[in-house]
Image 1 (spheres, rainbow, N blue to C red):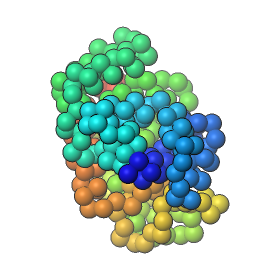
Image 2 (image 1 turned 180 degrees about the vertical axis):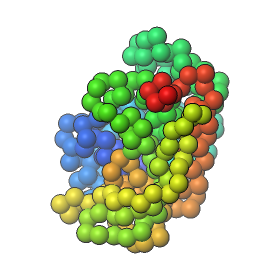
Image 3 (image 1 turned 90 degrees about the vertical axis):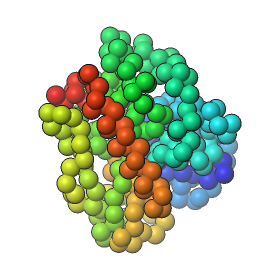
Image 4 (image 1 turned 90 degrees about the horizontal axis):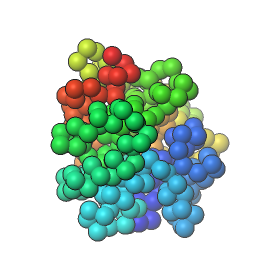
Length: 253
């Protein structure tokens, strides 16, 4: 289970790592592991270098007595599953405070209400609730914060066509209006599933349900996994839209 979890982690963590946003400096390392479908101590060590994701994995794992790279733990963080509903809210709040209070400064007050409101150690929570306060939008690196939030979350989509090393997919992009972030109408885009013959996921065909992270297809989803991703992502969207001042509202409003 830990080996499978480590490989799943590699597939989801590679896209931001390739862009230099988090994780080890060797941007091809995770892609090579994913393509070879092998896991060893090197991959485990690389996973521990993701300062954003790894503490969430540790929190989930500690709550249920599993390894941080257990397949269920990794799935809970990136996609969402029943493990999230057993998280101790007090411990989660303490974890967030220890990691982000200093980094957010005066904005920490806007993160505090997310815990009693239902915040969970799910990747979409980090993207919607935490990332806008501490991420690239405050560094001057990017000029399109809505696009960054949309690409940073794990998106679900359907394969329309496979063209060489790219995949044409249909998915729902995020939209911003006066009331908050919402899923918009379906859109078509081309994303990568391989580079120089190395791929994150095996053979794909039209109709496959897939997970998208940044500009990559990083996984093929089962019906249950797609439902979990939809459920927890929408739950975190509802949470941030109800906050007095959310991170997205601060940068997009």
